[in-house]
Amino acid sequence: MKTIQFFLHALLFTTLLASCKTTTILTSKFESETIGSLPAKNLPGDPTGDEITYSSELQPRIKVTASATAGQKSLTFTEINTPGLTAHNQFLSFKGISTDFTQTLWFMFTATHSGSGERMLIDVTDGSAGMITRMFITETGQLSMMTNFSGGEQVLGNIPTGVSHTIIVTLNLSSKKFNLTVLKSGGNITLTDRPVLIDNVLAYANPARPSLHFRWDDGASATRKYVLEEVLITRKKPDM
Picture 1 (cartoon, rainbow, N blue to C red):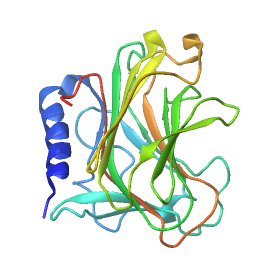
Picture 2: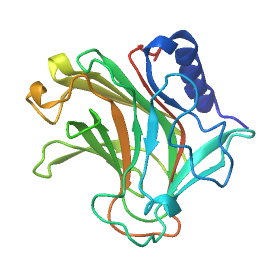
Picture 3: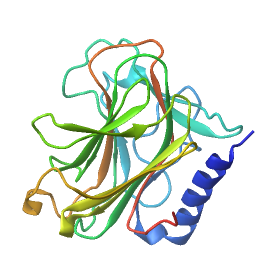
Picture 4: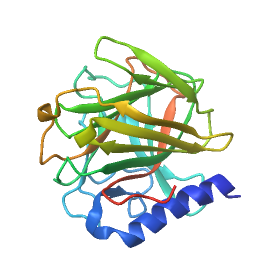
């Protein structure tokens, strides 16, 4: 049975997509994909030019699967042992179309995590070398955020195993700040006015291709999974 929390997440995404096609930078829901296959790198529908990128070495870890919601599909990213992985080819990335990076942007995705293994690393970037923020989710659900490039981290809260969560990063690069919202059952997590990781805004690409990147910490596990239900990057403020 669909939970109330899932309905809230679905309504948020559906309302947003219906009202702002011209402001959508990336949208991916996997519904047109074949279960058991790799996702198409060129995302279908509007906008034109958004894409998923992943290396051939990473392919064994990526598969379109049936969603926990009957009749829907998702993308499962596992941490199974995979040969040929290096420090540079382990990212599953969602790259939006070119846009003015100084305008306010919303990066959003709905997912669940499960199993024992390494941390899930999540980057929000300009699509090249400019990192806005980096987050981590451990196997126990501890959510933390990198505070500097020297390895500083701050614990933000907990996302329990198997709990559907929607993470929203609202970026205002002109002010060098972003907000973070995590929608989930058991209590949301909210942070405001956090500094971007690179203080010099001129270091970010503009125009940029706003992107979300997912990567497992080094290691392997037969059970660890991160299941993405949908991914969205947009210039349209969602109703939250």
